[in-house]
Length: 171
Ligand code: SAM
Image 1: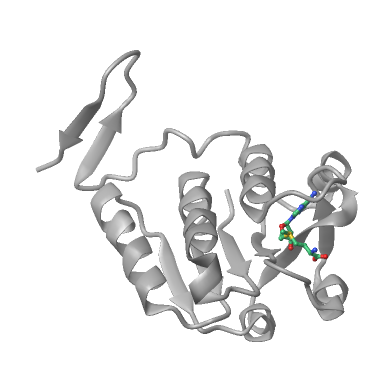
Image 2 (image 1 turned 90 degrees about the horizontal axis):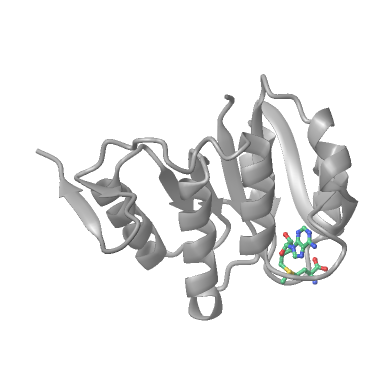
């Protein structure tokens, strides 16, 4: 599987703290390699790195990165999630699996240049909802669910359990 990167645009640290945190955590859990966020936010970086350190994997975060700069040197396809885009079921077969992808998600209004630059403008339904939901559904379909229970070799491993909580501390 190729590498999946997220570009989160329109992040406002005082308003979007929780949503952007969940964009990062959900994308990590669903198989992304890392996230770029357009506005510098040191607290957000620390929180995500702390989770990645405890639960493993090599998910990275970099804030204060303009989307134009993130996509400029990117070798792969750019996928922009928007309710105005083509249907996800029709877009998915066209997105190459042997190239990396960068997925752009917005917060408020997304500049028209993003629609022009994207190789694929993809909708997850044609109703307005949330960047977290759109990203989760897209990633689950793109990876065919393979990332959900993959071992990240972290300090802590959560063991699936019918009832109760089983957390193993790894040596
Ligand atoms: N009104 C904004 C606009 O016109 O761009 C969208 C705001 S929405 C709260 C924030 C982000 O969620 C969008 O930029 C998009 O990435 C994602 N999103 C929301 N609904 C979506 C849908 N139905 N399909 C794909 N992405 C969606």
